[in-house]
Length: 291
Image (cartoon, rainbow, N blue to C red; front, side, top):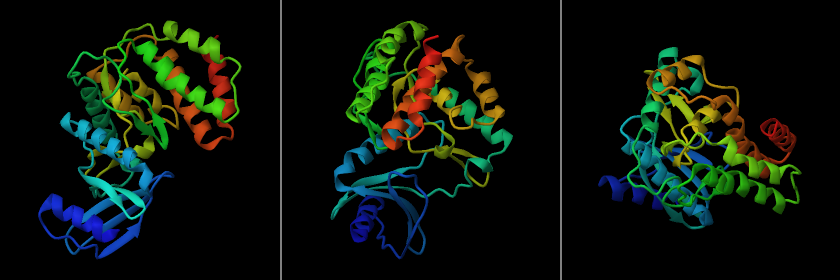
């Protein structure tokens, strides 16, 4: 397998690459992750079952779309493929100090750059969605093109997660009322923005020089507020991030109410992935939305 990956790198760069050293590194709970190198170059490799190649292909397309915005720093994609019984994606190796290594200026830069990303103009008039389905964690994320944002979010985000919960044998009693309420709760009619889709602190890092980087996206064209909402879900980002964002593109009135609905999507996904107390948290959020 590692010979195949080395040959893949050589085919992209035109320079022979032999994996002289590899070490396991943290890369989330979904994939195995490795830092590989020869005597001069370094790369980041994620591995999963061969059947998961579609997930890596979608990740590659998402990273390339983010890179094309020419704003936020993302790892360069070297390629993806299968070898033996494994699928892989090869990315540029970035020396990162983690999200806790960011200065106030670095976090403000991240906020400004994210706002500029969200202002990326859609290249078509198909509305909300993406050119293909991708994944949020290891959960499939359907991205059909829909012209109405509330319909997209009700059917392809909340509704889909509720269907997954039903397959687990769990039915949330307020589901019908929740789905019926979404058009009213999302009546602000946002323009389609290119969103990261899974923007929490674990998918943010900083270089030693303070440059912010984002990775592990679940990209689609959606309401920009979904990214801001998720930054608040697991502890929140520093205040300088939000100040930087607001300086470029202030959030619309009513965001604080909508963010609960947007973050319900991620809590339902965590329930479907991990179970546990996320179910009770989802019920509390549903009750809050329906008040």
